[in-house]
Image (tube, rainbow, N blue to C red; front, side):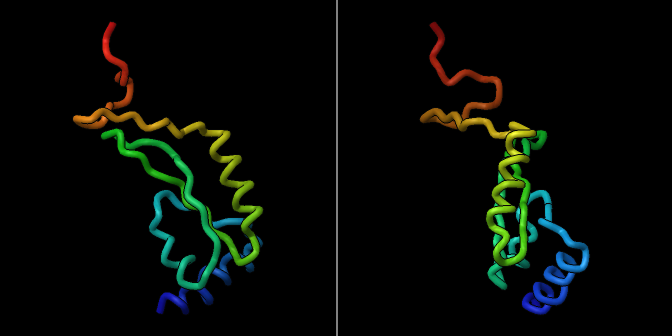
Length: 103
């Protein structure tokens, strides 16, 4: 069933609409692209109200890897959504908290 969805759904949609990429929030579309070997990339897109990160998923047709990388890089540069992770031995440091001890 997923193979049929990939070939008759995803590929048909991409070609008929002359799309460079399929874009979704999160990774729900991974199954459609992975099953038939379509390339995909996920990049940081933001944080939910609890501070958990989520990504933007870009998928394309076979051979579209350079275009997907270009699109994903452009998205990253435009949003600057990624924050370096901070951690402590006893837990995770929340956004806005310093990971350095007080002076």
